Image (cartoon, rainbow, N blue to C red; front, side, top):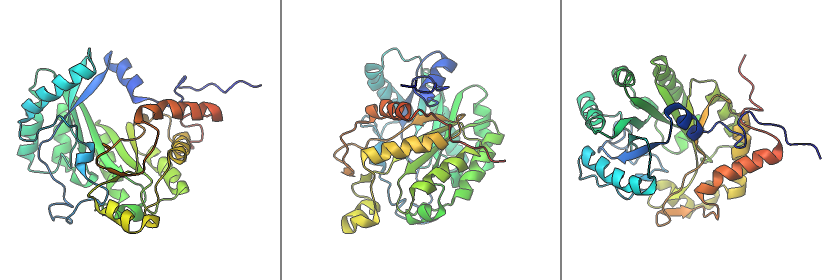
Length: 318
């Protein structure tokens, strides 16, 4: 029997974010979620109302968050929770996750970021936002902060397919993501792109083409999430009315897609997340037996079975 071909990424067989962070900072860097009360342009009427059809932020918001608390108080609460769960973590960064955290008056943005950075145990910021909510003055300010702090800019690309973006009421196209990623990277900001695999209308081949399109951009890291239907969202109601209009990926199908996607992705892009997990009380479908913690070793095992690794099918654009 021939030996499994060696991977440049060792046993994982993909470029793991956690390994990179531990090597760079000498240990774990843990995110402490905070909610600053921002909204989105397709919720407040600027672009539309109702938000993205898949979105219910309660499905991705830690239970310890209390929006009535100040940012500093939220950080204290989060640290008490995380210190019990991850004792000995060396560094923490404040994670502005809910909605679009660069969407608002510049002065308010600055005050929120600086309140978080003033906390003695916070070493930086992770800021989740949309590509159409990144004006140059905000990027310039984040670049200034990045001189002395860890700054991770998480841009919600969600799909590289304009038809899929329109179908979920995203309110921007892929060109907006290209523009935002390039403008951020030009300021030497490290960009994490967020992508949902399995949006209505996306094909397997189309998602693999998305891996190539993202690989051509100055993306530092990538978060991959499978489509989940969260109770109370328009997409969940659409599925209940017409399940065939919202095909859902089973765990085995997702794992195969994930392995295919990773094989076509640039080996330089760090994989920060491979999937997501909505609280059971909020998740309508799909129901997997696979837990999120099992996804990484299952992906490595699948790549090992194939004799492949991240980037082995990647072909840089000429």
